[in-house]
Image (cartoon, rainbow, N blue to C red; front, top):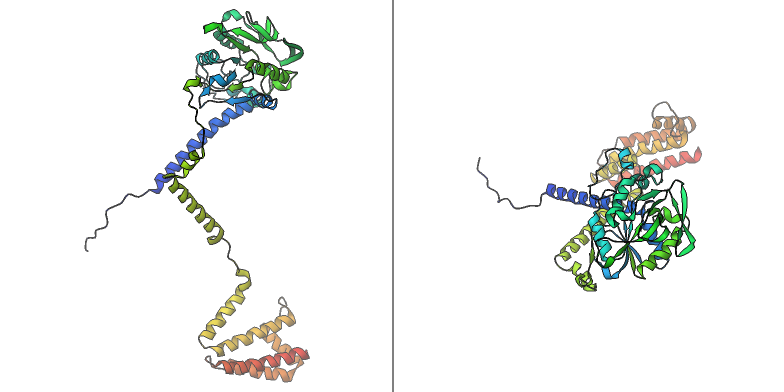
Length: 436
């Protein structure tokens, strides 16, 4: 056996590598989608602030929700709304292991108190203290059992503006109204209200000792900066905007604080505020879009176009239904008879074909007389001949002789001779049909 040699192996794209790459890409996409979905679920829940965003924009106040990812020019920010969803800013969030732990989980995601203070020192800020556990977002119900611990909330408040501001107070009645200081005709209605003493703060909603929204000094900041503190998020969140005059208070107070500039609702856990001189401003042009169609992307677009054309051809034509099949083909028995007749004609067996033709015609006449489901003695041909003998003996005798003559014909018979026998046979059948 001789030794064979082949070409040296060449580098080929392995199918398993492609499958692994596709699976990894899908997993990354699912992970990003889930993370984004959690953020959207929080913003659109009862404890989120997407309703505030839409409400202020409907009142012609420029408002935007921000989740991070790009720098913000702090000179264009009139008010930075910072909702807090972490009751333990110095501790990492622990994932819940059971459904009960998930409902009573006090933190939605981790936030840093230093980042919150840096933002408040950069631009005018409204810090919204947390109130509800995760069960509020998951169930949509505000039950007192789902309110976060008072000690944790006071720790956040004192860490932001100092312990001199006083502690938190929880209302004993389910619903309480708090006046807007600038317009006493507007009353904020809060369920299970969470207020703070507000020592040294200017009240905006509520009063000293029982303040809901106030302007408080920011310790450690330059030029004695101040920050707005909202002790109860139900004044502005999706749940609270539907109560009392809360929505009208938000439409009056927040744009006034922002001074006509943008209101940013900041859900991010990092400081994306940037000085104007550090912001890279670049106007988009059509050339930026044209770059997507230049090499090497052009090859990808051509490949995608060819793949699309191949998919359309394969799905619409090559693997589509057979066109025109029904008019050309009949039943299976009829198709078999036609195929057999064609073979006989091609092999010059007109004599053998005549015998089959006679049998077929006799069965057809029998079916016409007796029906397809009628039971007869013997074969349908024999029943038909018996019927003919009983009614037309003379024609039946001629038919018997002709049938015997046809069946005795040699298989190889000329077409002209075969036609003459067919004419005689059909003539007798016609007389039988007319005399029946």
